[in-house]
Length: 264
Length: 338
Image 1 (cartoon, helix red, strand yellow):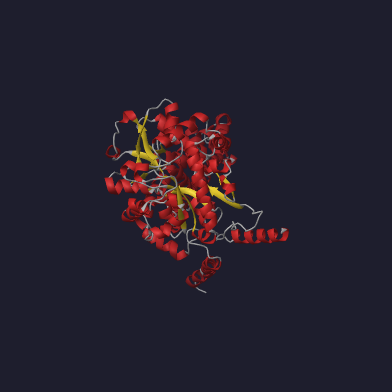
Image 2 (cartoon, helix red, strand yellow; image 1 turned 90 degrees about the vertical axis):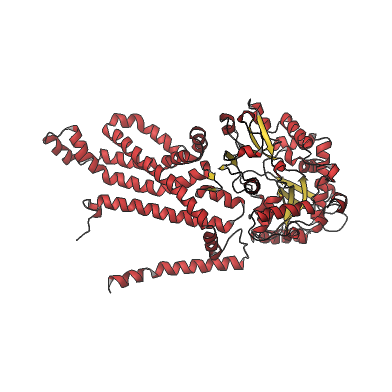
């Protein structure tokens, strides 16, 4: 069987599941006479997505901006913080509990505080996204910094490498796979963080806000098909975002790391 | 009888689970007439703006009418329209504009009577912000309910655009920011911010020609199957409201405070005072307005306005959202006033 054919065949089971699920959806709606404002049918959702396309597109762009900035902040701050924590056990012991406290603090409670401090809109949304995304980066990267191969460390010592050389040529590359795993998790959390942030702290210029804001707006107008279409948009955005992060992960690792090297 | 009740409860459960049935039965005939169980879903936590219904419960007006009424407190996630439409509750309160929008989305709801002739909704700002009229709001940031029709009306009829932030139902941002503007009830928020030392100004939305009634409504199917219950509930609610505004409010206020301890006697006095002063409940007698009344002409004009700003999913006619015959005759708007 050629690979092209095999790939096409692999598409059959998920496509079949999709058809069955959609048929079930229509059947349930018809049999129980569920009104559209409770459960719209797939075609009603697609129609709503088409009608609201320009609003949903701008909502997605607003949310993507928040997700991207929050993600970059989480990755950047997380990496630096992890480097400090990995540098000495004493620093880690002193600060780690407080990082945990920050992580445990539910973001829904922090949101009104951010709004009070940073104002409504992008700064607060970025802060909320950051809060949701930074911990996996810190936790994973710190782990990477402190779990350097003992043999390599001794080799560096034998060669009389300076501390900065050790950090640059051993610790940072060693921590890279861990950091990238944290980044991947932050990447899946960032779109969710930005939507939550938008929901709690977002605003709207001329009635068009981000995905979270549009959710409240459509819900208050009982536009349930548009609400589902908003969910679909959020899904699409999440896939694109995670796809981007995965590509970055592959890009940075595929040339040298064991996990990416094809087995012969 | 017991078996009948059990069977009834079983059917009732099935119907409720199916999500589109009715819970209440019409009162059965006979000497020992059982009370019909009714739930009213309010739009917010218990407050004087719902006073008439608590009064009708406390004074037994609903019981006299053969109804056993439970009041469900609302809140940010109260979803009253959805609850009425799915049959989870029989009645809810809200605004006519929300109702028309829901009907435009194919949700079968019908307005029955009005608890307020004039909507207490207003825009609240700090007096020293220099805002004097609606025009002064142009381009400012405002915290309001996302998707509300009145925002669009202000935009379309007065050309005012806002940078909106969703209502968080709090006052902290208003109190910390002298430039802050938010949606309010004139019967409510101004009292609290004044207590915190702020000097609020308000612009009533009705002064911008936004004239929804605050109403109680039911679902199309409940109305069709239980016309007598709807009529009885409406008459008793009007009685409750008349009595709450002018009579002895003690028991109703005690019930309100028990459910929502934020409602202190001072606050209730302020709120009822504001309702009286602005003729919110009783309306303007000179114009023939009365407690409970919904004037088909005025409601029709509101539907026309909502149609023209393009917020309705499908066209809505007056007959789709209102049936005047459930109002007591002496409450209905006089044809002369139409």
